[in-house]
Amino acid sequence: MLAKTSKDQTRQKVHTRIRKKLMGTTERPRLNVYRSVNHIYAQVIDDAKGVTLVAATSVEKGKGIKGDKRPTGGNLASAKEVGKLIADRAKDKGIKKVVFDRGGYLYHGRVKALADAARAAGLEF
Image (cartoon, rainbow, N blue to C red):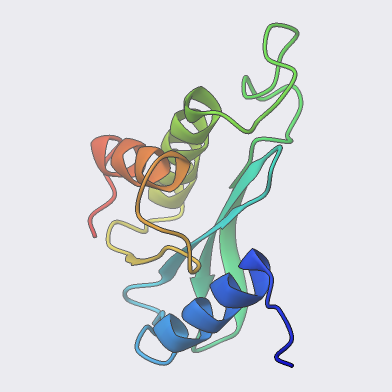
């Protein structure tokens, strides 16, 4: 009998397949997205050096992301705020162009909202 694979195992297989084709360089780093049930995380990574250059999450307190009104970061509004925040932090570091890594998730919902907000804030991908 075949073992059942979870959604996360399937996502990780898809992400591995995507990562074979995507590579963040010093000139054009990789914007990676991780989406959990309650939060969303974004990192700008230089794969050539193996270094995270910039990061933003919906977990951060005191940054205008998570307040008393919104107990969870697992919604579209938080994804948009994280997208804007990651773009602003990347621009502060002099990063204008990135390669988008959707992390094996469908380009839909919170992942799309984060990407659209990052584009609107000035990141090119």
